[in-house]
Image 1: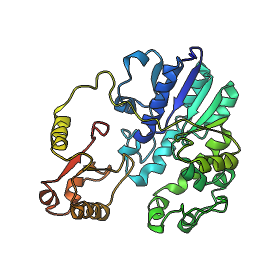
Image 2: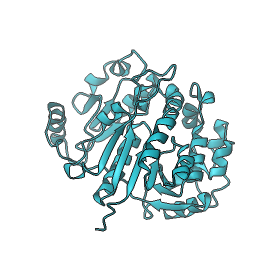
Image 3: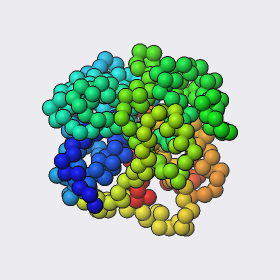
Image 4: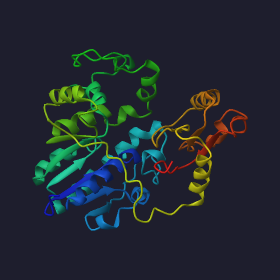
Length: 347
């Protein structure tokens, strides 16, 4: 395996576990090649990260930068899982306040490459100033990115009405049914304070337009046609880097705690490949009506399941109290409701 021991790469993910984990996995891949990685995030998020394998500790440097204060965003909110969906735009605005401290760090380290997320749309001018190359890591697949459009379209931010997302856009030249249903798009189109934060479309557009290469979490075997289209839309080098699946176990995480042992005991009692696992992700905030419908669907399905829930940030109501009355008792013989973080890989 060819080593790149002289290379330095700074990695800047968005403040969400669904972004931090893939960026860390790519950092591990680089570290295995001998690349020195500087992984920038906040103190609270560093504590949330999986343990780094012992053989890579000398290559991956976790850099903690305090998140500056922003009115109306709780000071302890350092991730998308810490705030409700309505405050996501303001959390991104708070993240933008890191531009100064991150610039100072980059000027000191002078990395060969900067690997950044869509929220760090201000990185490319900094990279040009210090002579670093930069790569935008896209965590969406090629079909989704193609639906979102080319950089010029994103920067213009022309799709403002929910209905604009319910049709196949003109820049997709072949037959496709990729589009939102109206009820799907309505939820993220009406975030509070979206008008005072930089729109996500602009962040995506600037991130793509300013980078030297686009790394995308997919494989050509999965979506060759979409990757070909995306290369034309972006007019950039597109580098599929695989799915970035996390390691099943790393040093220090082999122990079986009581929580996992209870889940394991229940799973061992089920037939092979029979259990439905339902988890909505750290950025999802589910409404009372949506949770009730999901619960009723699981109940009517008649199949074994594990439903992973977390208390909605910013709400005093316990998520378990939002379930239909008597639901847990009615499904007790074939379903588990798990509150909080779940060992997803082990499950």
